[in-house]
Length: 173
Length: 305
Image (cartoon, rainbow over all chains, first blue to last red; front, side):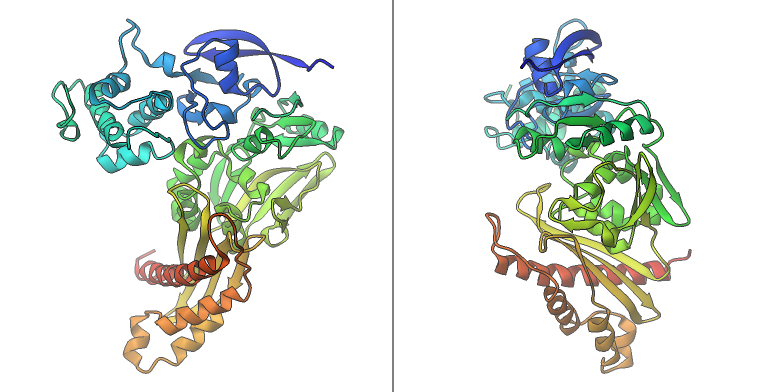
């Protein structure tokens, strides 16, 4: 018995994609398998780890807890959509690179999307704000210290500040 | 970790959604999906149809009126938590929401969805029960309102009929003289609580007139215990007028209240905590919550308006 398929138009990083998927296709799988956008990583697949976090209409959401067929009316932003138009790194990506905010990189796409939205709400976060911002994302490598630095650095980069913010003084160059 | 196959409908109107739900006895409603989708992915549930209500109009409201806070079926937890009106009219709802999972989950998760998911380890069902709220439900044949006290039948089991959709929840507002508090202990920030306690204390002058406390994760259903007697008797027995006027609850009073509460609870052993530890959390958190709610009532009573 073949599974019923649904025609779905997904708007991802400003581009409309028409796909034909079963109802049970998770948004995370649709992004990776059907659209080839493998920047979104799939970790626990039940909403705990945060690696698959994308922006749904600008707000962070777990793409493993949404079905592609439910995303038809939403605008999705993945980690691929965080680079600048000229292809250079966006401020949060740049901050992670500068502050060693990643090691193995598996969790990184979820952090980058979460922090991008978090800084839109809190443009000048304290270290506590930064920790709260990433509280729903798991990282097994970094111990979070450099991720918190990256949040503060990204806030500075968004402001156009060239000097490191206080929280990033120890970051290696 | 992939859901079993199912059929999918995304109605644009409530009537269509109710008909779709009634048409398939194996159908389930999908709102925020933050509890349902993990159950599907782990194949703990395998509905034959999902009725996605996210496209329904006019269900995302968060309104306050004389009766309290009214939350539509599609209002996200983040939106209710972010509402200053909600915080003013019923601060306990805001306190509890800040303990629900993480911000990313609250962006999708709905208040009403959490209520009818009926998890005894979740904050919102307990708070609705403690406040004596209700849920309005619709079916193809009509509507009805279910009081919170009649909403929970067992673990993950509400008293909604299969063909009903919960469309709105009512959380009564804070009454005169009332103060509230919410306390929980979890292994990690944002995790399910090992024990959670919310308190509503009403004071009249220097006296405790009423004290009700709600418990989560220490019984099969959200459980509310009236602890007024433990506190009222204690206040009457205080040795001096000064102690009464200070309005502080004594150690004996809150201990007696916690022991009274434990008679109504059934803390269970599991992977995360022993029943003895959960009972100890009941004692400690009951004391914290009663004192904090009492202080809150005193402060609010002293503040103009």
